Image (cartoon, rainbow, N blue to C red):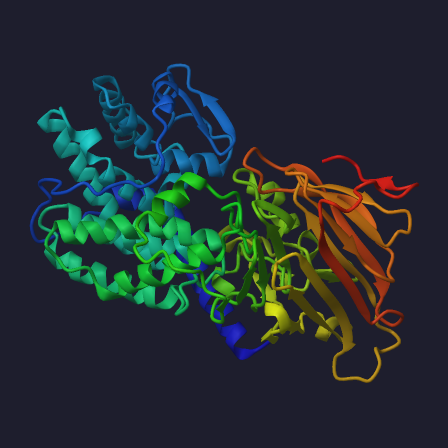
Length: 583
């Protein structure tokens, strides 16, 4: 283990100990610890805009005591939702985060305003004592942002006593967040904690001294987490959506207070916007890499409405570690990066050199992704290399995950080791084609194998040629005592109908729009097996995958081709074809 890795683990162990201490005394600290502050918070000055989509029909459900979060439904039957036993931590985090207030605001009636005040007042009275999840720093940050953005809903028509009670409690939560922000889970949660503190300094009166400090801490975190190419340090495409939904209203809040937004914030937004277009397929959905789940079209459209440049997406993101090839009406996305830093790798996947391919408005080859809710049930399955359209050796992942109980409770399951060197080259070929050549050493130390992958997309986007090569790592031959079984996997989108040909080396893929593509492995046997697409808008869906098995000592290279079949070509499958199970 490298010294840097040992230092990271030691630092995270200290943070874990501090977080445990905060967990034990956090609620008491928030309600009783009241450090002296110069001046008092007497009013809310501005209420920033909430860009997240609101559904007014949800307001009647909430009014009736029916709270549906994270795929779980709880009916309170006259009890306070903050006193019931939560069905899951994810459900509790969403409840105590108060993001659902936006649905009440969308309904815009005296009843919903009164309901919002009543629920906030209940939470203040109970102080979230029924569930410790409500006092996690990342949940406190989301609640602070929600209360500030929905201040008009909560405080309009309220009596002075509730107004003062609300502000006193909000002030205590902000002070608690100042104390715990540095121990918030690294990555998006910590950055959102600093966003919440900056929101509070802008929106609440008499916070000038806190604004400078909050802004400086936010800027430092932006410089650390937002990469030069606009990606996030976690390499999760979904982080861009989550953060921009907060960054855009935050920049407007600065302007509303006649304070110049920090250049680091504006520069981060300008860099992140092109990355949104980078990860989009032809149908508008994001590539399923490193923790990405279902793409919300309405949220994405809302964010892109703020993109004044609306330029072409980047072709390569060297800092984030991805490649994009867009030719004709086809899009190829490929993961060519090393795992993210240890502290932000809890959602990262072992999908090095995996790719996704879409044509027109249809995704064809995908990764499994993650579901929108109930992720804990699928997280480790989805993170494995076998859940990606790439090569797996000896049924193991190219990354190793730290499964320890203490680490898992505090930081999830971070990546402890993985590919250290990923080489990638991009070449233009004749007739406008583009070739990507990449390799990684994720299996080098364990199995003495380096995986090389080359893919070339034709200029018209109608043919994709690939080769996967398995070469010895530092040896002329693979050591005799090292297992060498490989599986080259191509997961198909659930809308694709796949039928294997009688020769066992090709398959016909029929798309929903009746386009037909063929997948050929030339000399290697092709298997059609069951798979699951986790990132469906309606939950996990059954699908199939194309797989080539072999041994690296016998077969060092696997060549394959995915090509479009013109409409005038015969679509009648050969005799004795073996149809794949329907999605």
